[in-house]
Image (cartoon, rainbow over all chains, first blue to last red; front, side, top):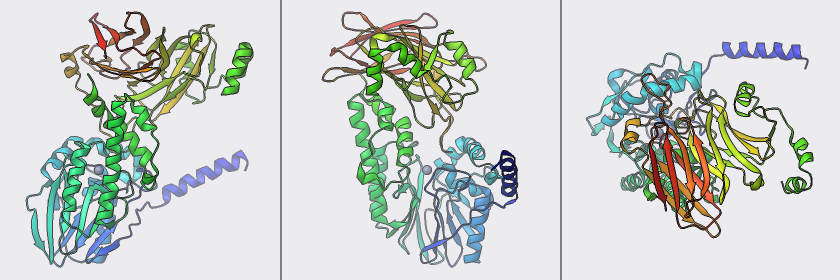
Length: 306
Length: 251
Ligand SMILES: [Zn+2]
């Protein structure tokens, strides 16, 4: 191609891109009676996935619809609303945010404000860090974020209730982010676990109060005897499989950091560590190890210092 | 790499010519500026033996871990190693002088204003610079929080130093962390205040390594060094920009 043609081509393709309507092209997957999931991409947020990396979902009860997480942007929230309208004509009565990470709540901007609910601590965390997240996302995703205003949820008070034929419980945990809400539907056995559970996708540990804490939460989740888990990231699967995917990784990471701190190793040694073969199925593992090394490893080092 | 070392022994002039790749591998727009500022007008070469590593992205731009490793460079030929960051307002981060019994290899945490090449330049005894570097993106995913750090907290225990010394078969790992705000003075109402000298000594109080810092080193500076001796303990002497001093036994 001549230089002239190349320039012409790049001008044209930019124009085509600008003219094209961006869309998340959401495809709901039915995972149980009245229960649907929108699978996020197991990648970093980027301009092709528009920030849709977390799973979202909803339960269309006979009375009204419950939404679990709202995705990364107003556009996402609007498309999620359309998906729901296509499946159920009932109103949306409850929109939950599992925790304060931006891939889970920035879509709030598309929903009725009074329906938005989260744990009390989550509302505080969003108040403190929400604007910063929103601007991070604008910078990384550009046009996907248009009109996304920060729309904070209010604290949820009702934790156990029957809704249109579904027995629902909302349970508070803290292992992933300090305040992690899960939604358990006893009627279908589906547990919306938020980011307490990652399945075949390496867990993000930047804001954990401690891995021991998180592992303890996973033990409690097991006791719910859920059938199916909708993890925050990674494919929907049997509860046991998803929980053990998360705990296997976390246990390995915890041991690696403890042993490395004892040996006097440094952050870069963690970042460059060899990944054991049994963890090869964990997507984004290099990326998450690097983040964990930076955020968590100094705590392990501090514990060893004289 | 083996061949390279071999050639070096035979003919160091030839090697200098061979290494002469004067073009910045990062093609940084600031290269001309930072090279003039830090390289004292001496000849320089981009040299694979000077390895700088860091994460792909900073995650916390106030505490970015880096490692500088010049273990493949003949240690008796090393005068000093400087670390600088093209796009930092304070581009010079530190100068490391290995004196004796210490490997030309260290890690620390630095501040990163924005995505930038982070470079280590080794000055050899002939007066030539050998340069390596790594490019670090300033932010990670969208979940990164703004850099935090309570500088007031560091004032409480100024120059208090914690350490961890791990003897190995023929070397010793030394890890130390000293409490200091390391203020850049770039924010309104703050003044520059940082540790400027850190000296590591052996049991006989002989200097092993000297590190000169700027406020571009992260708050509560931490260093990992490796001694090629099997010492039970080491000493560190610290001095900050206001003349506060401390001496601490590392064990
Ligand atoms: Zn999360």
